[in-house]
Image (cartoon, rainbow, N blue to C red; front, side, top):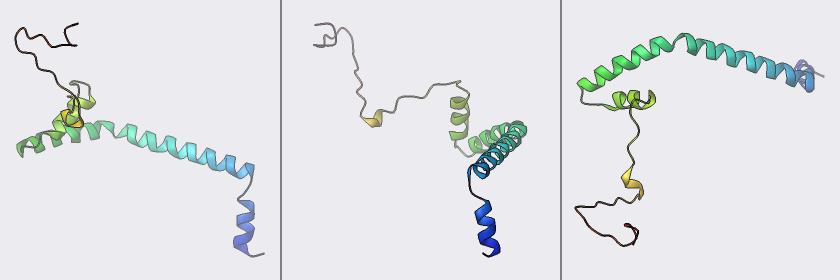
Length: 99
């Protein structure tokens, strides 16, 4: 049996699977910690992007910021087949006025 086969034989089984899961959890925690430490810089970059994009007439970063901070609510997308009913004055519409 060659070196690769010997190593491959050792990297199997319940103990190895448990070790791999522990390493995966530890790496995930490390990655989350890195993201957590950089959230202020990311927020500052986003704020800068809002101003830069707005200067070019692109207000998507501002909209995204307002949506993700729940400052505004998304507007219904009328292009997806939603019905809109407009009522002017005292119009009676069968089925809508309890008739």
